[in-house]
Image (cartoon, rainbow over all chains, first blue to last red; front, side, top):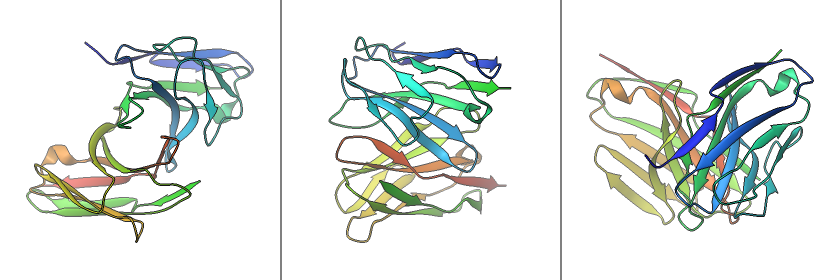
Length: 112
Length: 109
C-alpha cells in the first residue's frame, strides 16, 4: 500500500541522548516535511525539503536536523534530546505543484 | 510568517450544520487547506481553495475570501464520526503549509 511510513511509532528517551526518527514514502513525491504537534499549538513545521538534495528550516528548527539523500527518505535527528522535545512528530509529503499533504501515522516521543 | 486563527472548540447535534471559521494574515498566499484529524490519528485532507468562492464536496464545503483573509468549513448533516479536530492551513509561495491550532468539534446525539 502506497504511503508514508514512520518509525518508531513510540519512543521514550533519556535527555541528552541522540535520536533519529525515520520517514519513508513510496509515492515519489518531491516535497517532504517534518511537523511536531503539541496540545494547543497545532502542527508546527520543523524542517522541509522541496526536492532530494535540498532542505530548509521551518518555524521551529532548533535542536533538529534533517537530510534528504534521495527522494524516498527524510530522517529527522535530535542530536541531544531535551524534555521540551516531547511531542508527536508527523512526517508528510506532497507533490510540489498541488500541495496536498499526505501524513504518516506519527511518532510519539517522550524525553525524560 | 503566517498567523492563522480558528475557534478552539465547537459542539453540535447529530444531523445539524456547523461552520468553522478561519482567519489568516500571511506574508504570501498560495492556497488554503482544511484537514480532519481524529484523536490519535494522522491528519487527512478535506479540501483546498485557491480562488475565492465555495468548493463543495459531499457533506463538506469550504469557502475562501482572499481579500478578507477568511475561510470557513461547513459540515452538513453531522454524524457522530465527524467528531474530530479540523485544521485550517495556509500554503505560502514556497509551498510550505502553516497550520492553525485546530478546532475540536464534538457531535452529540
